[in-house]
Length: 553
Image 1 (cartoon, helix red, strand yellow):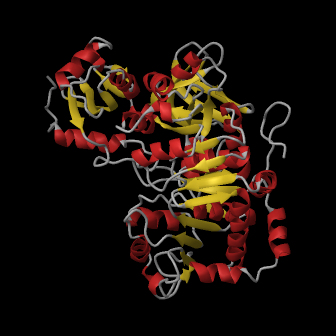
Image 2: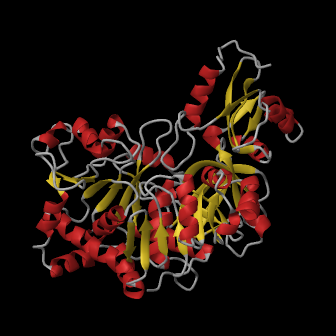
């Protein structure tokens, strides 16, 4: 199947078309491997067709919304493929959601059918569904979620009175003729919405990003091309499938390239290293947190791994470590956000390492990027300074579901997506992200991007991970606060870390507060393994007892 035109712009396609081509070419080859699971492309295709028939029998039609409340597994993939085959829209549920967030997501997305695991990593999903919609114990629909007509329990044969057991759900689909499914698949268009991605919601309830088949498949194929993925590669990704770094940049990258995807329901660093070794994985991906955790684990030994590349959303210090310590010498730097499917900028594996290390990337063919002054809106010429990264092209979302005002605010009057991220661009057009505008803080009138200080701390030989935020200060407005996780077996005092920073960055950037931590989990992380800066800031104010009249020493 032809994925690109002569200019390397993705050819619009549907997921079912790409799945048919990949399964036809790679049928018996490994498609997905996880602890206790090993599925071929034929297995995934056949499993998705069984689920598509069951969804059809349950009344799911083109354009209907189906919620998936599952961990990373072949069932998640098959359900995603099944929805796509019918033209239904997948609504991935963040497995970290609490009851209030789950209710908001299912209701705001108008979910018609929910497929959920009874439990996941010790979380009682069945109880959570019951808490959100008590009618699941009696008969759906209920008052809380009047549009939810069917709940399917994937935990076994037992199910609440108002839900359907998974076995019964599949059995009902056995009566659906194959020609009916084929007609349904033929009616799906590349511009149909494939998935509604709820953003991490670090500051408020999340928004549902509508992404089409063409958006996500085009992005996945373009990323696979830049990474140089071949059908023989084995791609390990711990990215949760409920996030676009999992659905697009893991599941669909594997689908478009025909390679094997390896994953886990939960990121256990020791088990991940074992899977990387035992399965001879050649590619991996993630943000700086994940790579630092891998390289900082006591069991890490680069010589036992077989990695050559992948992608990383990381700064120069971490990229250098990935190259030198992890020995993934072809790793690409990546930048994106959910609203752009998600990848906007990416290195090429053949780029000079210095370009990949320093994050100077290019947009995909057919995608435009520009920088604009955050205050005036004026376009910033390449090489003329920093500005907000804005995007226009085939990878940009269809909008936020049911939120026309939020959608309008997300775009400029001339149709460019506002990313809210600060970037800089070289005269040759290569661009990199400098920081998130909402995370920027001002120390005595000077702008500081947290990533700048984090990079300095990451260069210290004892530091595994650093997170930096601005905290209130009565004299300077804000000052730098830092939380640092040390490598196992290393010890360093906060005064030494301050001295390290003082010798390597401007005085106004040097942390006035530092705390050594054992983990960031207690502070709060998003489903994509990013520390939530707003929660970190609130934690810092309480920890350091910062009052309106506090002046940092």
